[in-house]
Image 1: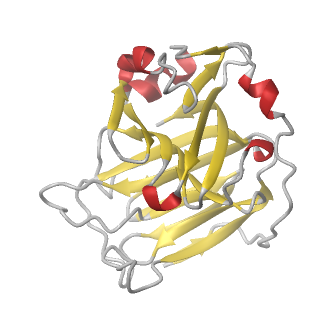
Image 2 (image 1 turned 180 degrees about the vertical axis):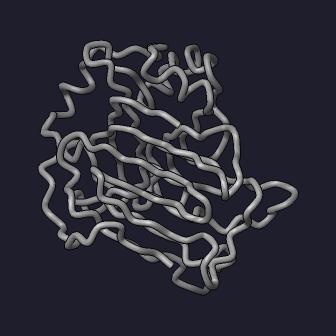
Length: 253
C-alpha cells in the first residue's frame, strides 16, 4: 500500500530545535498581517481556523482585521523583522486545538496538485509531543457525509523527527481499529526544512528534505473516493496536549 521512494534508515535523532527563547520571539516586532507576495496566493486560496473547533475564522484579505485583535495575535502573526509567518496554539488534543490554514477549493483524487512550504519548529517553546503540520484531508458534504479522517498527515513527534501517518482505509473506524501506519523521516526537526505533499493519480507523496514516502489511495482495502472532496491543510493541529510553535518562510499550493 505504501512504499519508500528512497531506502533510508529510519533514524530518530534528538532535535536541538531553533534555540530561540520565548522572550525574544514574543518581544519581536509583529504585524497582525503583512500581505506580502510570499504568502499572498496561499492566503487568498485558504481560510484560517484556530482554537478548539473548526469554525471559520477568516478568509483572504479579511484576515487583516481579524488577526489584529488581541485574542488572535497569539495564534498567527508575521514577524516584521524576518518576514516569517508564525503559527502557535495551546490546548488539548481531544478538543481539536489548532491554528492552521485550510485550502478552500477541493479537488479529485486523480488531480495533480502540490503543496510546498519551508518551515521550522521551535522546540524550546513547545511542550506538545505530537502535532500535525500538514495534511491531505477529505471534505464532508452531501456525497461523503461520513468523513473518516485524512489519508495522510505529516507530524512532528517527540521533539525529534518528522513522521507521516497514513490512514489504512477510508472506512477504518478509530473506535475499533488502529487506523494508521507511519513512516519516520531520517531528518531531525532542527532548523528550516522543506516539505511537500503531492497528489498524482492514485498516489499521495509526502516529502521532507527530499526524502519521500508514497501511499496508494486505491490499493487493496483502502477504498478512498476518487471524485472530489480532497484539500490541503497546514499550520498546527495538536495530536497531543500542550503548546506548539512553528514558523514559515514560504507556503504555496
